[in-house]
Length: 358
Image (cartoon, rainbow, N blue to C red; front, side, top):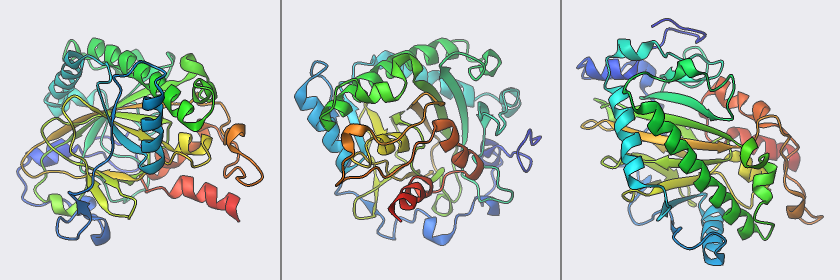
């Protein structure tokens, strides 16, 4: 495929998977210390991320405590009874499965570039010769409306894909607003405080990335998505309902494989909320395994601060004993790192904090 701004021609992972090859190209083989070997003790079946029931009315002190504790201790939780209709979850999944089952040629008309990443993609980062992840994706800006949410980036097939995705985006964005209020209350600040830092409900950015991980003949040698923390504010993931793959870095450094609850969302703190809360809430490394027997699809929605607002630790969380760990930086400035370098653990947010600690 033509490079379209990428440092090398883009190869669709789905095409590699469907070629019938028994081995993966060297470009996808991870260094030994990054491989998801099931025999190296890095997975844990006895530990799991918290589950938070959101069925209580908005403003519930119990919900705020549960959300806050999960964000402090894990940076991840599964949200059940969240109020987004199950039938909408199924519609969104079905529409995107339909898209990824189209011939590669039909999808290629939506090929993306590293300028905005919007569209059909197969890599993150622009380093020539980089080791790549075993996955394709589709990335879209849903909010705010404007040049980034270009109409020509919406697939025409399946016919209901755009309607289902836009409705899904509205519902999940509303859920994010509720979660932001709970996170704020759990910090002991005004429930609207984090939302205010994001530029208000209308200022917040909403993006969706649909991840497609084809079958892989050597899943022990590669990853669907390398270890990283999310650069934005908050991520709400609709995981594949049939195939596990997400792993979260546990507090002891071990990798914990998440068992998705049916119709639940997996929610995680992004780097921007770590910055705003002065590390009270922490973003956490996570990665994705692939599978030899089954494809996997997930829908990640990113709820981000307005991209041109300088963000720094909130004044209420800073004192002589707990100084601000980060200098102001806009999300536009911050996300250039992952767009250039691809997923690299927590290297960016930690390096910024280390600069303040010196």
